[in-house]
Amino acid sequence: MKKKMTFILLLIFWSKSFSVAGQGNFDKRVLKGSIESYSVSISGTDIIVKNQKNKLTRTTPNYNIEKVSTSGIDANKVYTDIMDNLRTALSSKQKSLFKAGKNILVSFEINNQGKIEEPVFFLSKDSPLTIAEIENIEKIIKKTRMNFKNPDQYSSINFIPWNIVLRSKDL
Image 1 (cartoon, rainbow, N blue to C red):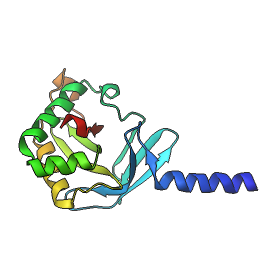
Image 2 (cartoon, one colour; image 1 turned 30 degrees about the vertical axis):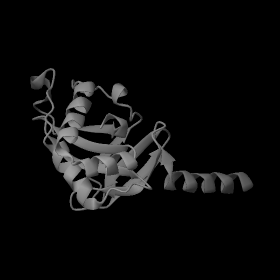
Image 3 (cartoon, rainbow, N blue to C red; image 1 turned 45 degrees about the horizontal axis):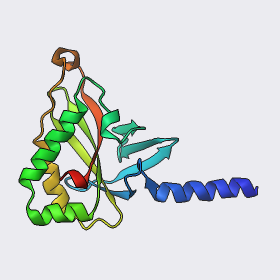
């Protein structure tokens, strides 16, 4: 009985604050455009994100950009393009707030046209970024287009789930 209770308490504690690949603690503060409520759960090494209507589920064991080059997309180019767009579009104040808030985990979809949709942001608990600043980052990220290595292969898909850590040191 004691072991079961300890396991339950450990599971509750782990679900409230968890680490992502050494990138710092992320909480359930998930922001998206008009701030929708998403649930976050942990299953083994996977982090599962679901929206209220349970239509969208994203699961991945990898949050390291070098390990998510799937679906015929060049992961390093995705990361470089997003960071280049952020670097040029953010003001110096926004950059310093981003850096103070450390890394941001972003989960999004890439549609069959290579367009980023439905970004969901996971911020560290002590992040100084406001909702308005996150919405600005969202607009910049959505301007980034993905190029498929073999576009015909992806013409019939609806979306590809994608997760990326925007590293503040690269800003």
